[in-house]
Amino acid sequence: MEMFWRHGYEGVSIKMLEERLGIAATSLYAAFGSKDALFDEAVEMYDPDGATPTDRALRLPHVREVVEALLRDNAEAYVDPTTPAGCMLVVAAVNLSSGHDHVGEKLAARRRRDSEKIRRRIERAVRDGELPRRMDPARASSYLVTVLHGLSIQARDGCTRDEAVGIVTAALGGWDALVDDAAALSRS
Amino acid sequence: MEMFWRHGYEGVSIKMLEERLGIAATSLYAAFGSKDALFDEAVEMYDPDGATPTDRALRLPHVREVVEALLRDNAEAYVDPTTPAGCMLVVAAVNLSSGHDHVGEKLAARRRRDSEKIRRRIERAVRDGELPRRMDPARASSYLVTVLHGLSIQARDGCTRDEAVGIVTAALGGWDALVDDAAALSRS
DNA sequence: CTTATTTTGCAACGTTCACTACAGAATACG
DNA sequence: CGTATTCTGTAGTGAACGTTGCAAAATAAG
Image (cartoon, rainbow over all chains, first blue to last red; front, side, top):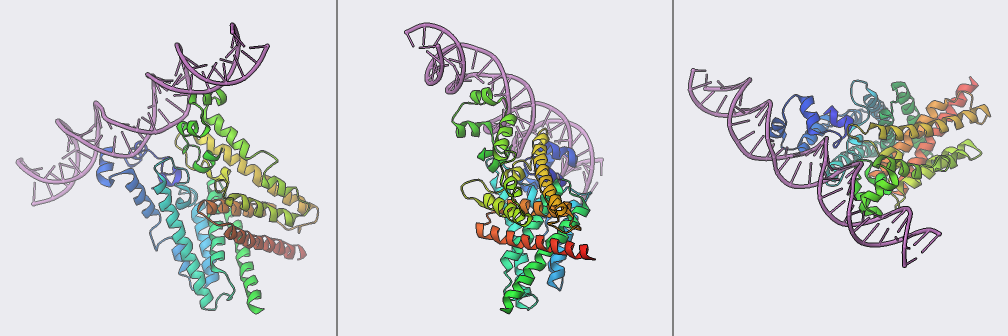
């Protein structure tokens, strides 16, 4: 899985996988059927539905701590030196040659899924009165996802943990400003 | 240039270039020498030093309008429907197979150059008293660059201009919060 | 017009790619 | 132990890749 995360779908050849997994190509195909299917398994292993840092953050009781955990925990994961940098869903299939577009689309679908989870959590907080009525969940979630995607690229560029934490803190300032602005609108 | 921007370095084959440029491979090589050199030319065309939206924004007189133009103008460019989505420096060489790392490194160097330009502009604003003394230029520029990189991925995912503008507004809230926090620190 | 230059088409080159067939070797199971 | 299953190594397949050589065709220049 880490190879696809680090090098992307096309950046990893069957030969590299043989060497990494220590098995012959024939067994690879016997076990997985195709490079595509192997990639899918790798993605599923990276992004098990319900068990990601995002999923865990979304289950926290208060939306401010949800947002904080969402950004912090993902940032921590992106800069974790023991794993490839960034988010696999963002970086593993950006560049694809003809015929491989479906690979990138699967990752895009997962990114959308995550974005919608975040939006729905914010909607819930608005319904529950935890956030102002005039809060725009779509915009807020877009902003948070933008920061996460950007952190992923920054992690790939060698961003340190301290830098990532600093970026998260700044981004939380942006979140708080969103909430304040919505509160002011809700009062007028 | 647009093909590399849209598909990335390895996603564009010489055959595709032949068809797009309407010339034979032989002439391609006569003119450019290699695919690498052609890519370099494309990058230089996309990112002429001193003439990018970032460069133009950095020349504005007041730092708040610098930051605003930086985010808005880049976001506009990333979602411009007449050009490929996102920032070429971010998306054109994320996934590279063995032997092509130097391609990605050139783009990373350009990203670093831009990040440093932004940091230095913020440092200048601190020196000139336009920003609080306790402002951290490195952190502030990291935050801005993170937002830009994230917007690039969002643009690739089909983000509309309105969504991008909304994200920029939220991110500006984060910038303002950074300034406010630094001002509070500077007073204590 | 002639000559020089550029471009083209063709046919490679050597390499890499994902994938397959198959006999033999290795391992697992009863 | 014998049998079944899995894995291996080998030798491909057909396609794609970036690049090159070269004669002929096309274009540009004087």
